[in-house]
Length: 294
View (cartoon, rainbow, N blue to C red):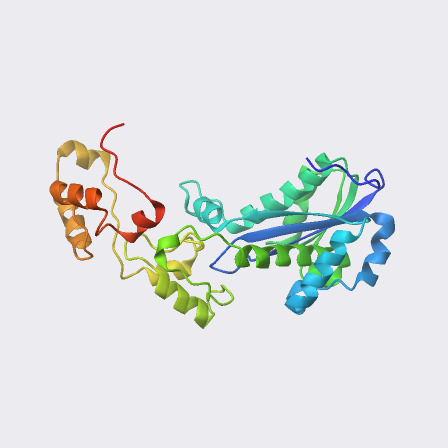
């Protein structure tokens, strides 16, 4: 764990904000910035502002400056698209607000565990501000919480957190290691927001009729459902159907898959597996092979 700064025993203030809540691509990032309460007035002189109002070059400059400032500490929580989708589509679903709350509370706990004496925390609201404040106060009773709309425009400590989160997300997208290396994936995906024409075109270009989208995409977003409406329908057989030996649903499903060039013929599968030709690009890109013995 990162060691606490020299001023950790002094009463400290923290700001928390996120970047990437709305996009259909890439991670959502929560960032925090903290400093001694006595340094709060100096934050205004650093010209922090809501990251959405700043050009990329200015955000990068401010980010590098705050990293060098010995009176400031910061941390981030990067929540990848796969984790977001898994939580939002799980049997016991966790909605985006709850994911956001948990991330913010995780950052507070992380800084407290370092030994920093947090006395005040400012946050941009997620959901009802008062309910969110009560929730935080019940978890961390020794801290004063201020939760408000547009907190990144009102409080410099939240503006700084906004810059930390936004720059971290931008860099993560630029440096994203695309797992589907065999899919000829390009990075011209625009802003990543569902309404961006360039993002829409990228999604349409990179969807797979059976396996959906690359791992950069948040499958839980409604935009994805719209794009996949005309693709292969997946139906899961129940245990009862297996026990009864009813093969009707399987044959119907196979008919749908066969339209897209898939087959379950044993001899055909063995031929493809041995030659490597004709296999779905999804499996080729991941170097997935069929196992017959365990």
